[in-house]
Length: 166
Image (tube, rainbow, N blue to C red; front, side):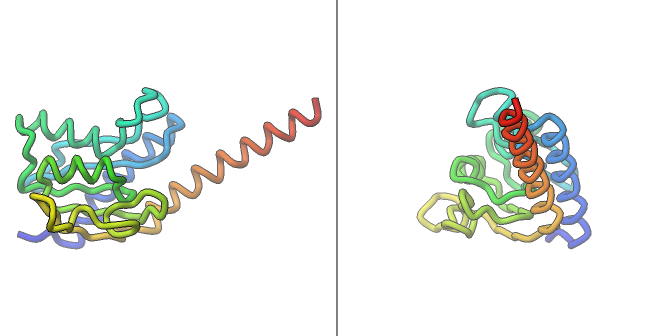
């Protein structure tokens, strides 16, 4: 049964909650949840900076938790909600774990592979394709990223200014 708009918003708000957790610890604020039968079975937010591990994206962590929850590498009959369009690595993990539906908030002009730079998830040359819907709570998802990077630029400008004074 297809998800309602209300359900899509509800689960993207959960992904935004995860993104806010990432922002609180200085990580790029991207969050993800995986849903099966109306229940969240996996959550994740970026931990790349803290771990110094390039693979610890929100989607990768949510997929890992969902795999453990269902005790299978196959995540059939699930929906993935992520605040930012998946990158090539995360798109590959989505394909490999057989996630049939992907919903994302903001597009990623620098690394997005679910429609922006290319569309890996709907490419029929792969052994699995996913239904994709973009723009769920797009403004909120984009704003948290814009605000985060604006804050970083402001801090860096202040640091440079203080160095000049010293």
